[in-house]
Every structure is written in C-alpha cells, then in structure tokens.
Length: 472
Image (tube, rainbow, N blue to C red):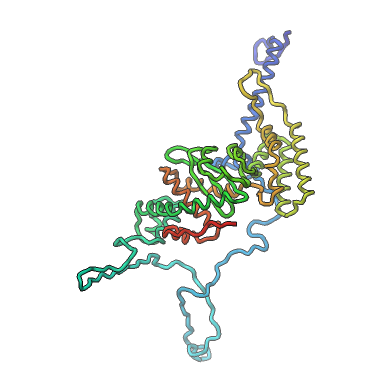
C-alpha cells in the first residue's frame, strides 16, 4: 500500500512511500524525540537536582533565582529568637593589668589623688603578644668525679637547637587541618612568628604524628563497627597523577578516612569496617554498599534532588507528590509527632504515589533496530522503580529514631577532602595521602568529642594521644 506524504521543501511537492517505511519513520522520530528530551534533561542537571557537586555548577545563576529543596518560612535571616549567641566575655585573671589613676584637682580645688576609690571599671583587651616565640635554654651540668669519671645531667633535648612540640603541632594543624601547603605554612611562621621552617621539619612532624596515631586509628574503626548507625560516603581525589578514592565512615563522635585505588567493594573491603558490620549503614544509592549484609538506610536528600529533576525536567506529578510526602514525614519526625497512626498514613500515601506513578510513566519505547541487552529505561522510571523496590530503606528514618533523614553527616565529613584538594592540590605520593587520612581522622574525631585540637595534636606527638575511644 502506498500513501502520499507532502514534502514542502521538494520541488515536486510530494513523494510516495510505503506504509512500512512511514511507520518506520514515525518510530524513528518518536525514538529521537525521546532521546532529545533525555539529553536536554542531562544538560539541565546541577547540584540542586542531581548528584553533581556544587563546583560543577559554575557561576551562572538561573533566571528564576537559585532553587533548592528548602521550604519557605516567615523566619528572618540571622539568629532566631532564643539563640544564646556568642560574645567576648571578661576573664577573672588577666595576664596584664594597666591602672588608670585619677590625678589633678576638682573644679572646687580639692586634690583628687588622695581621695578614696569609690569604684573601678574593668575593661579588657584581647590581643596577641608582640613576641609569640619563646626560647628555652637547657643548661646541662657536667661534673667530673675525683676518680676521673665524667657525669652529665639527664636531659631529653639532644640537638643544639630544635623546634618544640607546640610549633610542630601548629605546623601539623595548619597543614593537615587548615590545608595550607608547605609553602604557605612556612610563610605563616615567617610573617607571624619570625622563624624559618624547612620542608623536612614539616614532613617529619607529619610523619611523627602519623606513626603515633596507628593505635587511635584502629580504635576509631572499632568504635564505628560497634556503632548502631554509621554514615558512609566516598569521593574521588587526584593521587600520583591518577584518580583514587577517599572513603569516609562516620558518626557524631567518630570519623575515619581511608584512601583506596578502588571505589567499589574491593576498596571498601580493604578498609574493613563494613565487612562485618551488623548495624545500620546510611548511604546514597551507590550499588557497592548494597553488597554488605548490614541493614541499609538511603539518603533522602539525594533522593529529593533526583525527584526535583524528574518534576522540573520531565514533568512527572508523582515526583512532586513524593517530595511533599518525604518533606512532611521529616518535619513530623523533627516535631516528635511520628506515632503509629502517622507512620501508617505515610506508608499508605507512599504506596499510592508509586501506584499513580506507574500509571503516569509512559511505556519504554522499543527501538526499531534490535540491540543486545535490556531495553534502556527512562531515568524517571528507574527512579520510580527504586522507590518501589527500596521502600523499607527509604522510610527507615520513619520507623527508627536513630536513623536520620539524610546522609548529611557523611557529606560534611567528605566535603573536607574536596576542600583540601581545592586549597592544596593533589597528593604526589600515596604515603602522603595515607598520612593525611590518618591525621585527619584523629583531628575530626577529637573535634567532635570536644578536645582542643592543638592540645590533641601535641599529645599525639609526645606519644600520648587523647582518649577518643569510649565504650557504651
């Protein structure tokens, strides 16, 4: 059978094609339209509607303004009513006291200096001393007995001159915690303290701290393995001219970093935390985490970003409904209103949204030319199937008070690694990356537990790291 199809650009005005060719063209157009829509959606992805990092967004802002997943409230910017705030407070024992005495005469002619003091106003100025460097000289006595034997007093200081533990601790703090590279750390000491520190001193200080923290690192891993809930994440970083992966595992009290050549199960196994873990692991939908037998909870912040993309770029109503349900469930948990009735309502609405979504999603187009393997599904359909198949893991925060709504704890901890790469650049050696991971694990854990960081680093340098491991 032949049909007429008008082609306006051709001089003859129309051509004759077969019905089968016509159907094939329509199928091709439909398939290409679907592909164009999918590619347009990929271009529109950013950090607010996908897993892409904020650094990939660039400086261009959307015309409608910056969009995010936060709900609009009537609260003003800044501290809210009832916030305690922070202010500079006077101390009872200042280091220096400057007296301002009254001299001269009153207008009546009375001498003011001999009069008794009625009151003293105390005003304190907090500042750095002009001289930050303190040099301590150790004078070691040497005596000779009448029998001829020489005796020397005991002293732990061996070199004629050397830097003390607090200077080394400050160097480690600047390099490993504030991410200053060696050159900028040296500039700090020259400009502020007035001393010149070599690369070898900085490197040896880091290595000394790294060796002293071998046991604390094992204690952190043990504490994480015994925790009810842990947070897991990973990020790529340049090391030895190649991309390697820093894995983080953390709780509110502990942080552990480890660099591995592999991102997946092989790298996670090498760390040894998740291999025998029996608690709840909170993470994104990275498939490698699902291979472990522990209980899983998915990060809903990641899911909200994906739902936002499906809602805005694909126009699916089910995605908007799911966003509203998850946000409402999280608010109910924050307000401590998640009773059994509320949980049942959430689950029922969840299932209804899935049911409506399956009806809303169009069938996957079958390509005219058959290819090997499975037919590719749309991103919105794959996300809907994830919500259908992983309901328990997504809603675990509703049923368990210890499980958070998102994986933001791990996100905050792993963000520090990206900040390190931004400021100091890549790692030139694997050993340097390992030194960073161990020291950073200790510092992050110490800060979470309220230890003064400089004192914690100094304690590690002298061989007595702070007690960061606590049993329940």
